[in-house]
Length: 469
Image (tube, rainbow, N blue to C red; front, side, top):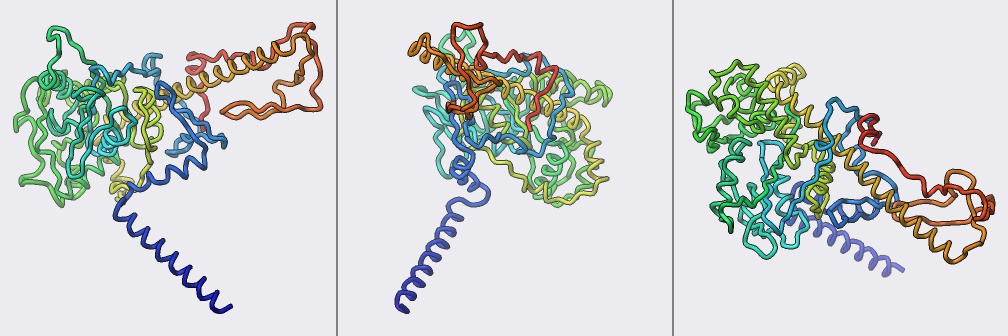
């Protein structure tokens, strides 16, 4: 008896040691937050499986019935739109042809989570020909199937080819000519490429704090070109906030006090057409008039972009990208809130001052958030409507088969709205019920419950926003 207990004790110790060894190896192989992707399997087992349709849409078919997009970001239980958008603005789908000549252009705004999203683009998309990424190399090779041509213009594919963190003004003037130089069109006189611009935005206060912490650690973007109307700004047009090589160790107050700090309202400036206001020459317009024009330009460009996401809405960002481009990600996006900016304790008065410094970014973000959530709502409604239509078609086929097998036989009809069988997202399970009564087909014409069409439309959505939490 004692010998058996001793063997069991040794076996238990061995199992514990193996477990500890595995944890240690895992930390070396997959450090930091990257390992959060490893919980994918457990997620699928808890919430059911999902699949991607032929056009890249993601359909959740978990038997739990829980919406994976609900409360992923702590949003309000009922979203009430503030802005009116056209149907074209809300139903965003593009005919992206990765085998043709189309190019996705990623406008990477500093400290918006663009590095993470950029890695998703080159490492986490299901492709016929995946991007080739090698250890120790910053850039990946993202070729089209059967061609040595790139379909992605981004930091991790083509590098900073148009300048470090090039903005909308720089990219729209640089990318087409650069791509035509690197990959000349077969017929020079005929433009052949479609350029689909995408970007990520972030809450202005947290983005600003994140940039301050980044600069405080000694980072700079002095290599940025800021090209506008064919030239870079002069030192008088764009003065520096610090005399040395960098601004390491700067306090938050010093960061906020510099009137030339490009961190102020960075998102508006990087998304607007700077040519409209004389580029970096601030003497042509008053400050408020200048920023008002830039804000309207940024809103217009944002609406016309093929896609934009929000750092605070990772799962919805993934969903809308997949639906827009009909591409599917391999692993789900993860909502990470443990950033360096989140660890900064900032007084409420200081936060108010930051919001005031970035008031144009705040207005743009509120506009972008409203458009983003409305697009998500419309996309989900369209998806549910398609799923409903598929179920109705399947029920009609089932009814037709039953009718062919027993013409003239009485059929059972449930007196209420729906028969007492359960309906899962993946199909219907039919059962009998003692209260079901017989009704002959020769009687009065009736409308079966499965024939009732949902007449909801875009107009219904615009008038009555669906509760999605």
